[in-house]
Structures are given as C-alpha cells and as structure tokens.
Length: 434
Image (cartoon, rainbow, N blue to C red; front, side, top):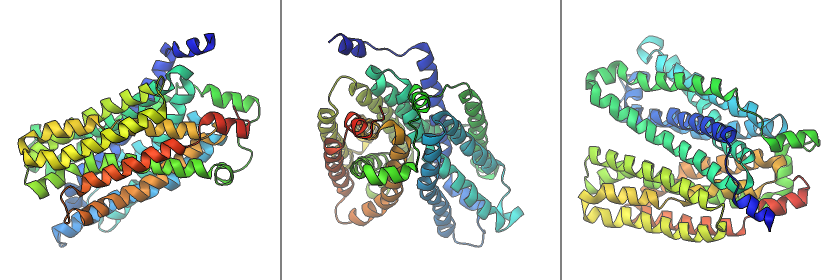
C-alpha cells in the first residue's frame, strides 16, 4: 500500500524536467524542419524543377519529394532503433537531431535548378531522405528516452509533454511561415525569403544537438548494461519471434494517430477550401487553432494515464475523436464562420493521439522497446500516412462527410488495438528483462 502511495506521489525532479525540456525542444524543432517543406512546396517547386514544366507537374514533383521523407522513415527508424537498443538511447537521440539539422540547413542554402541543373532536385531528394531517416528515430527515441527517465508515477505526464512538443513543432512551423508572409513582400518571399525557415531550422537543430550532449543515459538502459541484459541478437529478430501481437496492436494504434493528424490537421485547410469555398486565410487560422488544441489535448490525455486505466481512456478518447471529426466535417460547413471553433474543438478531441505512445511503450519490454516502438510506428505511419490522403480523396466525392467517417472507423480500430495490446509487465515477465 505504501509503495502505491509513493508511486502516485512521485514527481519530476529538476534533472528530469531538464531532460524533458531538452527532449521536447529537440523534437519540436525536428518536426518543424520536417513540415515546413510541405508549407513551402509551391515555392520549392518553382526553384528546383525546370521552368518549362507545367506548374501542376512541378508541384506534384515537389510533393513527391515530400513523400520520399515518409518512405525513408521506416528504414531510418529501424536502423537507429537497433543501435538504440544495443548501444544506448542517448547516442541515437543526439544523432537524430544532427541528421535533421544538416539537411535542413543545406536545403536553405542549396542552389536552384537554374544553377545546378538536374543535380539540384537530386540533391534535394537525398536531403529529404536524410530528414525522413532522422524523423523516423526522433519520436520513438524521444518517447523511450523520457519514459525511462521519468518516475513510474509520472511516465504518462512526461511522455505527453514530449508528444505535445512534437505536435508543437507543426504549430511553430505554421507561425514562422505566417510571420514571414506578413513582414515580407510576396516577391521577396518567392525569390529568397522561403530559405529563411530552413536556415533557422538548421541553426536551431545544431543548438539542440549541442544541448542534448548534456543528457544522461537512461537508468533502465544502464541497468540492462550492468546486468548484461541488452539484446544479444538482432532486436528485430526478437520482435518478430516473440512480440508479433504487440507489433500488430501498435501499428493499429498508429493508424488512428495518423488519421487524426492527417485528416483533422494537415488535410483540413485544402479540403475546406475545395469542398466549401472557405478562404485560405481562415482555413490557415483554423489549422493553427486545431494544432494548438491538439497539443494541449495530447498532454492532458497522456498525463491521465498515470491515474486512469488506459483502456477506459481509450474508450472515452475514441468516442471523442469521432465526435470531433463529425463536428468539423459535417457541422462546420453548415456555418462556415464557425470553422475556427470546430477546428479547435476537433483538436481538443484528439486526446487519443496522446494515448498511442503510452500503449506502445507498455507493449514492449525494455530490451527491445526502442526497436518495437520504432518498427511499429514508422511502418504504420509510412503505409497509412501515404494511403490516407488517397482514401479520403476517393471517398469524398461520394459524401462530404467521408473524412469524418474514416476517422471514426480508425478510432474503433485504435480502441480495439489498445484493449488487446499486451502490457509491459506481462511482456517483462515473459522475457525476464525488468
């Protein structure tokens, strides 16, 4: 009884808060670096592809480069996670920031097609692949790192603050782009101003890498090293042999996460403009409101897992996610001037996103935790992150509420996956890791 009270009263020390702050800052900057490419795709297309091509073709090629980053995530995440489970969490956690900062800075400095010819888009493709590999290790590495540093009674809070930092990177990217457009002339933005967000991202990334050098290795990994319980064979082999159920459930949870992020946040502005003729300025404001509320909701939902059953929260948040999607795509079009409100409401209903990393962390024992989370998260994100826009685009002509129906369907899938997902304790007993 006393031990339970001790756990419930556990708090984050100053050292743990410092670790959490550095981890969240680096994660936010990495996601900022990753998404500004999408925000500036039209200008990138004009600079890195032949002017003789049609504008729609150049933009399609630019989004193709954006998609290449998603395809690189699984490979980069799996490779980085392998060394994270065998050599240490800290080394890989620091390396991921460097792998993001270098290509981001180089994108801001890379000469255009007029100067380098066909080499320009090829180099840009390579840089984008490097970014994808880095982001593939950042989120799983961050979740594992902070959860293994946090006291048991505050793992949910610590993980949620990191997840909020990751989504906050999207918000930061939106703010930087809006600020640039508000203080610069359109011709200047098109000529050279678009490079500024990339250069800033690269500089901030190097600063985050320097600060992460002062992080300590996680206590759990140090204990595994002392007891010689790090993976003696390939972590991926152990996962496929002993943790197939955990992998499947984690991938299904991530499907729900991608649906919430892609459909309610990233696809919402262009869909509202196309389907309901809402102005771009209003949809961008709605996107900011949705992202801010998403950040708050994932922190709150994750923190609640320290005191409330994950299965109970998954049912509540799953229903909330469906309601938020329905409000955004079925109610707001009836009252276009309320879009910002419904976008913010849908963001608040995205608490399920905060439950996903908690579920994945609990599904794998420490010996293969980094690899398990990374494998499940990155493969699922690559598959469903790529398929979701195509599915929505196919279904929307049939009914304008198709996006909401799709999100509601994935919410059901995610709730089922969280309910049947193994827990860390059972997995630990099976593998005798913790």
